[in-house]
Length: 219
Image 1 (cartoon, rainbow, N blue to C red):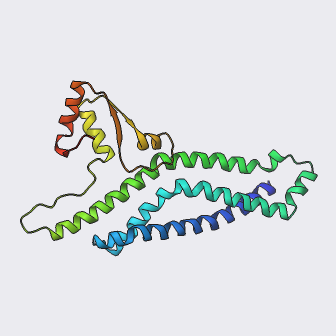
Image 2 (cartoon, helix red, strand yellow; image 1 turned 90 degrees about the vertical axis):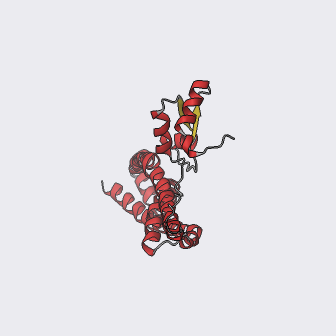
Image 3 (cartoon, rainbow, N blue to C red; image 1 turned 135 degrees about the vertical axis):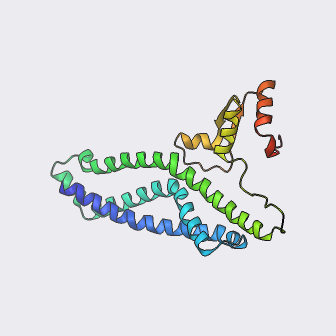
């Protein structure tokens, strides 16, 4: 009805402003943290923009709940100061009916957060690392003496590569740690891959064979 549209219009207007402001701050943070490192690696202007655009979605898991809360509080405060909520209550409209659009948007936001945490955030974190590694590879290839093969700097423990090797070797293991938490909807961002394997002699030999060329060190 009219009140639902009015509430959502006020809320989304403030949400857009807050979201743009927070994303702008995240943009500055990315530039501050990574700009000099990427420039030292020889990144071009297009590389920097692609890196920023790929990295920003990884912050959505933290930014979206905060912006939703702040914008909702501000919008409800505006309605309260204008006595619109008081007028609705005086007309006999229940509190649950007044906040119905808030609950509906909240449920949609929960679904969106689950999707972001299970797909977009892990992709953003992994892809930003890959871009940084690719830029470093190009720099090393330029500086490598003629006749020598460049040494890749891509992270050897990438999730898909590690799991593929272990699965093909028929290793008994489970995925644990940050990546497992992300799969179950956590907003946690991890820097490594953790697996728990059966420590039987046969399984240990399978792990050694699958990962022999990575020169791993047991700690």
